[in-house]
Amino acid sequence: MRSFLEPGMLVRHPQCPDWGLGQVQSLINGKCTVNFEHQGKVVLDLGQIDLVLDFGNAK
Image (cartoon, rainbow, N blue to C red; front, side, top):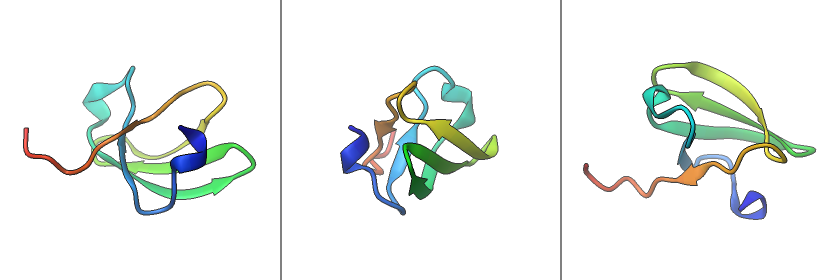
């Protein structure tokens, strides 16, 4: 999954659904900065978590 992420993609954190939708801001050395709608900017280690892509489908 890590190799497919690019800035601008929409993702969700599988263990923190209350954070809401996030947009990937940057990817540097396995660290991903994501701006979540209810949590703000968070830096995640992609070796520890697999973010879930969100294709913007209405729920």
